[in-house]
Length: 205
Figure 1 (cartoon, rainbow, N blue to C red):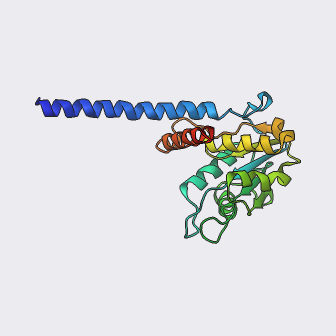
Figure 2: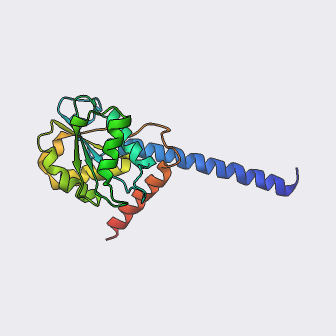
Figure 3: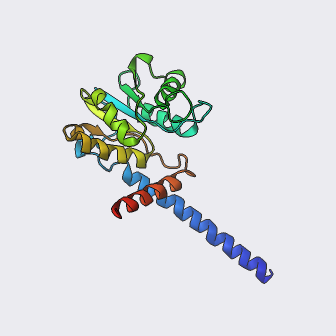
């Protein structure tokens, strides 16, 4: 084997190990984040009576079609509670196109994920995660337990916002089923790095 080929093989091997390490790291930090900002009584992820699932929006396409991340968040919501008995609050305004994020996700949940239309409530004014919480609070007040449905790091941030804005509801937060090993594996490293950078920038002022 030539020197150049040997070096290329070594470089490819090192790159593969680096990628694998990054993926495993992102899975580990996502698993840890899935229980952050959840009270001890809410760690058990099994559905409960009185569940209210707050499904956080994600920017829609200009064509008004539901995208991969929005579908993922709907799937997380549905597997986090009993669709037949839980209330699903879809939150998100029309940040891309003319149809709200909430309406797009709710329609998908009803059409493709088995959520009864009568169990769906829309919050269509919010344009940020902080506003997702602010504008949804009136819909969460009577919840027996509250699940925040989104990708793991985003859900953790929203749980912290909820505890900040409504401390009296913090003990009702329950862990959702947002982390599954290997699910959208290619996306998780980006999300983990994005959230890490966000927290570093916040700490820096």
